Image (cartoon, rainbow, N blue to C red; front, side):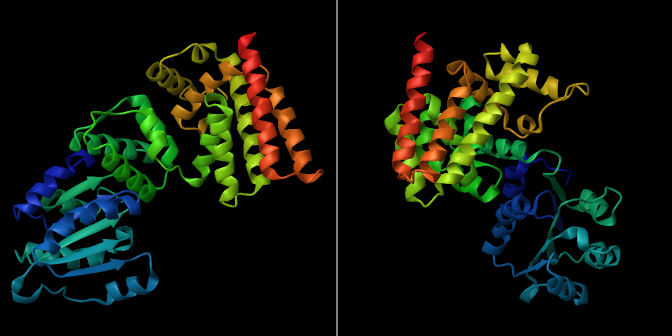
Length: 362
């Protein structure tokens, strides 16, 4: 079997269901992603009655047990046995030889699922998997690219569509935790079953952002929603025991980032003038690849959609001194006047909203 891309996983699953199983499946990439994808494959074999054994070589005790094991045994009555190895980069070459020896003797009693974060192409395991098994690399892309590929595959399977801009919003909210991404994606597809297109409104309605992304969403709401909706979000954070000072600190960072972006856009007008998201991302990528450009770290760390969205929000407020002044007042009310956090954030929200509205009317 050749090298398979993540998009070709469905083909491998179909082959396994037809009892066309490789001796070795080599998954390369982040452990939480490769384990999830390997499960899809070896579950097919377990349903057919294959015995199963797992070793996580990142655990020293399990690694010792694995290295002590001699003569890997097939299942009872000659059934194929499944071995799953996490941390395949810890397997020494001598152990690799022991693993592949039975296959050279045409004893196909095992299937190995080996998960590794990295492996050299000259390694005996890689060469054997390339010749007799299947290699599925997830490490050639950035994490957000892997998530995006999986999102498009899931949408296709569910007969749903989504604009590129909406997909970027979803990915920016769920963050970089794979399990949270999977849970939110499954929930989104379930709630939108029977619809043709998933909209941004559906994303906001259904998707639960990661804790750090919840505060990103708060900054976004400040410019897009009416005061009542914004306050509900503040109240939800406070009801869930979020420290008022922590919320204020985030808002300081949020507006500081906007100011940094504002200055950067003044220095790079070609980026500022782009109103189309896809064009914006192309210009942004060109700027990032320019070795002579000095780009603030905080901007590089932002998801492209969040950066584009922030650029659009800057059109709604010309004077960023206003939110900093209001945050200063809010901090005094909390720490000096000991006002209720609910009252403090109510004052902040309505004063900011009035300022933004007044600026847009002038």
